[in-house]
Length: 121
Length: 116
Image (cartoon, rainbow over all chains, first blue to last red; front, side, top):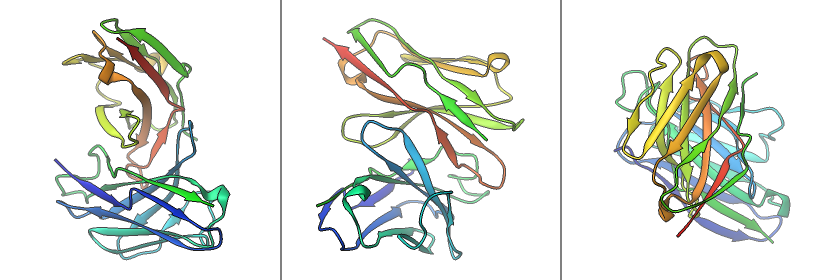
């Protein structure tokens, strides 16, 4: 089945530093990737939609200058949390899908990475 | 705007009991998909089932079954003969087939604890 790999699985960083999280589709071309954030014991909230080769679309209330998303290839999207602060500590999880003609296509169930637990001290 | 409500925040059962998770959704779209995902303590999201808005046939897949009632906008999920490994948070989710593709709106989740 489709596999989405996310790295790192956990990271601890100091306040003010930046952290990059990678999301890779291992066996299909991901034309679109989605980034979610999940605070402890809460639901998943969509942060942004990333389309390969174009700028990400951010959800209302998400700071695009703080959460930089790059989707430079069909198998890799990155989320960079810039100048991280303790309130950014959360579980970040990506998901991916292929194009309309893809086996992991437009209406296929999203496949999620294993998530990244970010702790900012 | 889309909305998914899971009224049950936590359910505790003894092994082998059945567990039914409630999900109610709101959408203005006529075409949409509904999903159930499982999130074990390790954090990953595991896809369980999907239903599209045109298919109200209820099915059983192993120990999982679901009841989709479009008239009441509900998409309930049942685990039969629960096992300790079923302990996890279960999320109901809704997507549309518009330009956003598979952008998902998640419910708040229901934590299921299966005791031996």
